[in-house]
Image 1 (tube, rainbow, N blue to C red):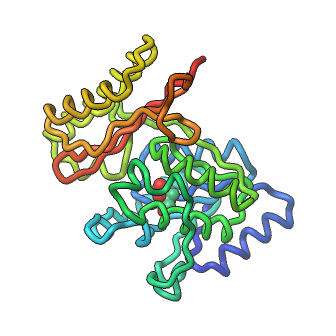
Image 2 (cartoon, rainbow, N blue to C red):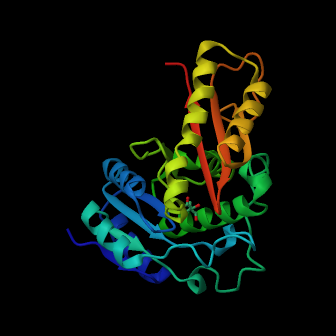
Length: 285
Ligand code: PAF
């Protein structure tokens, strides 16, 4: 099947309008490109959920801090297009920065999701989640999908988008998809390619560290603070520069109390120049 590609908002709207007139449903996968197997898994899920699958590729300047990797972020549109075509996506929306922010980035109307924006990764990346919520709200208005699929690798992002659509009554159902991992456990990420071969060899230790906490929680250990501090030390001794290792309530990302029975363990750590994030859900079966 032929995949269409559009850059202009008017062209996107025209395609979506035709599908809607034909009574077709739409699933949406927003990405920043440089696609890997994790993204293609999201596209596969989208295809099961709706008649049409739209994928966006847009490296969103609003969600990068001044010292972050916006300029260096890998842009591989030709390769991504081939992958999406083979994966069976119906439409690739790849707008320019000018098309999305014609008024510039300073004075953009922004979406802020309280409670979830400034904790965990948000505490280390000021403004990041406002940038994410703003672009996702705008993409939802442009694509007008029935559902949108987000990887749970970006757990905080997924919960924040759920909260945003609920509070703003945006009629899009949000689907969280399990993290896709390399064979050695490393969560797939576009940023993994920044790792040197020596760092790549060590990177799965982050997942092992989270797995250790999961095992202790399953065994009944409730010394949350101690487990977190120990994991931070363990990561440091392995050459990481951890920002946080936190055990949280998976629904609202609040700190757990004695009655909490479901958890998510989340971590962010630098390895060399690369910032890695990962998490594990612990939900009773
Ligand atoms: O997860 C991402 O790739 C981005 O944060 C998203 C959701 C596409 C918004 O730019």
